[in-house]
Length: 215
Image (cartoon, rainbow, N blue to C red):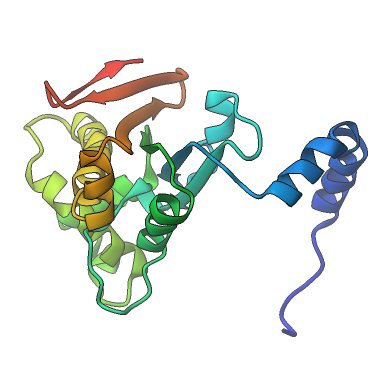
């Protein structure tokens, strides 16, 4: 591929620093991971946003979480149409191959994808409404959340839509037959979380009230 280029120098420097310190000091641990494969107990579906640092939030080491990232931490409904489905494939692998026990959907504050959905559904983002927009078509998954927003100012409604992205994804997960079966057989639990980045806050979805409460 003629358009590919070597890594930027700052990344090379960081890698060499990691190899000489973290890796060198934990060589047996990394070799154990390589030889025994992965056995995570939980899967986390989070946003691509670079500020969402899943392993840091939970103090997790390598091998603990099976992590899938996409725009706005969304899960589409089950749709075995033979096309490309990255998120659905990750969920299938986590449930059927890795046999995870917990599946966490993690939303966050200031989500650009959710804001794009809000603007698109408000008629203020025509570019996202184009059939050629991958982001726009992906964010259609969240449109039902916009349609159900309460009255209020834009910022309050956007925050509500961020949390709706978690709830909608949890609902869509239950449309996957293998997820539904695992949940009903007490082999899997689903969890919804929302991270307030600036305050370091974490809220969990409470299905009995339909709201989020501080963890």
